[in-house]
Length: 85
Image (cartoon, rainbow, N blue to C red; front, side, top):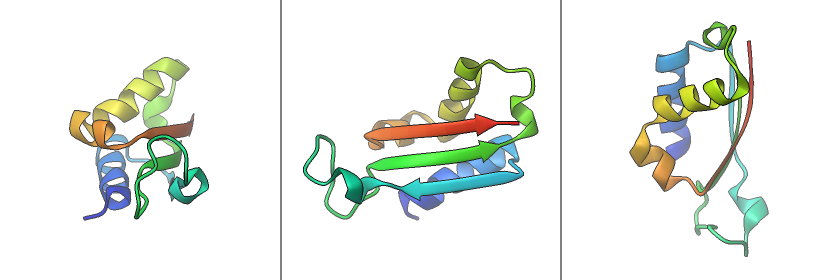
């Protein structure tokens, strides 16, 4: 399973989003720190989930990191997030 698939699976299971987009932006970072040949080092995630209702921005980020788990978070060089209800 690719990192992209792992991210999608874990976020769907933990947060039951009604909108989820996981984009691998690695190629845009070629030559920069953390770039890995073959991609899957830099991601942008858009999530809309009722699980975020009433949660602060920091709490939402923590929820995503918890859902992904420490080993997957450590394998990703950069993760940008657009999180909403």
